[in-house]
Amino acid sequence: MTTEDDFILPFQIDGAPVRGRVVSLSGAVDEILGAHGFPDNVSTLVGEAACLVAMMGAALKFDGKLIFQAQGDGPTPMVVADYRAGGAVRATAKIDRSSPLLGAALLGKGHIAMTIDQGPDMDRYQGVTPLRGASLAEAAVSYFDQSEQIPTVIRLAVGRLAAPGQPERWRAGGIMAQFAPGERSDRGRGEEVEMTAEDAELWDRAAAFVQSTQDDELLDPSISAKTLLYRLFHEDGVRVFEPKKMRAACGCNGEKIAAVLERYSAEDLRDMVEDGAITVTCEFCRKDYRFTPSGAPVAAP
Image (cartoon, rainbow, N blue to C red; front, side):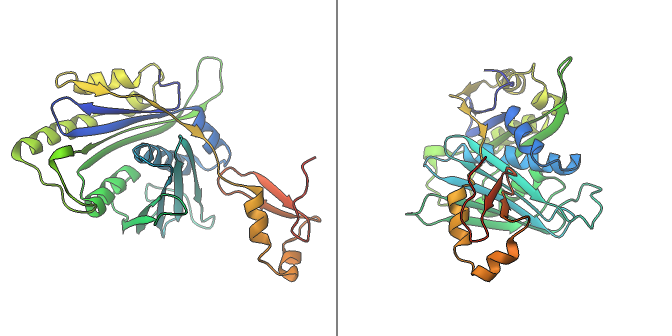
């Protein structure tokens, strides 16, 4: 498998309580970002969110969903992405068109929320922390430090590349590693991880290697994930596991939208009518769903 594919590759450092994942998104992130036409810096932010939620969601051991949301008071007040079991990822953002989309602080001051949805028969778990750091990767690391008490390091890269004779396409890549004491730990969620002096030395070494990863190593189609991991950890040894395929897929559904419209009064529905129909556009995939003035679905032509 090469970085031309959309996938997550889990790995573990030999002899060290360190686990991680590498993500490479090509067609998936190009489909996600191409649907919106955001300014490049907002597209970069959305692509980073897609990488983050993919790397974190791929660790889920149940048939559920992980939702990542960053909200702030900046010109891009919200970025949201989610991962569904089986490798489906989607992402979007809201833009304050009245504010200049300049500089790095697109989100401004706010918070990050991670929500684990294990299905209708299980309680949701949500962690919320202040939005800290100069980048989305730093903000996510801060989340794990504060909410989960898990030492974490993350590198993300998003950009447009073009093969000879081909148009530019969005690509995104990321690598994250976490301290994972495994069987030696009986900690609960949110309890601080205890490290021995040896653990701390091994973790600091692995984290420094991950931080040294360059953008081109995450984006270049000629550099496979295995090659990248070998570059970083060949002195220590690294074990890779079965890669997980990723895809851009939206969970929007015309029947769900119709059920929502049923809650509105006839007067409210009439106020929604434009050009003889009610049109609802999915914020994620930008697909239009059309309904009659009474809320009934309009058959596709």
